[in-house]
Length: 372
Image (cartoon, rainbow, N blue to C red):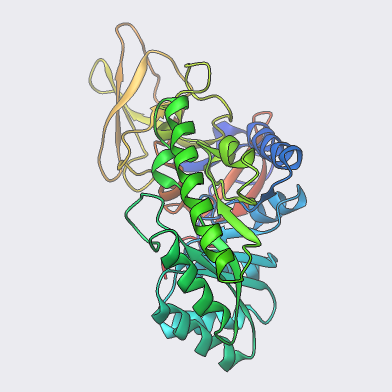
């Protein structure tokens, strides 16, 4: 049984650290803002569960109007469906027949779709779908410049769509069109130009698919850094934003349309940590290190106090440099804002949800470690 760091009703100061905490007021404002935008823009919202990995959060997003969830891994899809989500897109390619059988089994109780960029994937998915007597939704992923997954836009996308349409057990739905590299481009105008270029490529693929007598019902993509561009394009039909509910240092580093730091959404996710040593002047050691947050996008920021910054981390410790004259008593709790929310979440078993200085809820991170 996993250790629970707190109880409902505890004060923040009573939480056993390190702990992953959520500011519920900021979190709910973020959810409401994105839901309101999608509704006003007339676009479906399919939030990305790789950010939160939590069925409880997924259901809250669906209650606010989201059509379902997307995720990257079969294990994530399983956790979501077990938790009550009934429409899941695996926005990734799956080839292994064992994983495809797991998806086909899920399709007995939920709408399941996935992405393709090769006929071998199509054939394998068809075999699993027929074995379980289900239908899987199918999207052709096009490469918008990420140089990762996805077919060449245009005729190659149309040829794969035609192949899918003729394959039993699969239903061609449209395109996976995610411009991931644009999400963290610093300047607002440059992000806008990147999505305009992506839209040209998407239209090229839609037109090629039309020439094959097929229709794209779904054009899905978009992210927290560019959602307004895809959302107002009248081209994309679904938004896959994920990080907007939490935010992180990577998104804080980009600019909004006013040139100021990106403030579309609020930081709501933190690692709560405690000062455990002040043996050296000008330095404080906290009890959250690399097992509590990741560093691939940089060190977390100290969010709760001025005049200090996290400067180093090891497995179990973080080192905070104090500006001249700043004193931190032993036992002080500090909120760190992760530089990258998605992998930081995957290091924890649950969210400790805070409102008005007290624990209001505990949400299990049900898809933690679902890497297959």
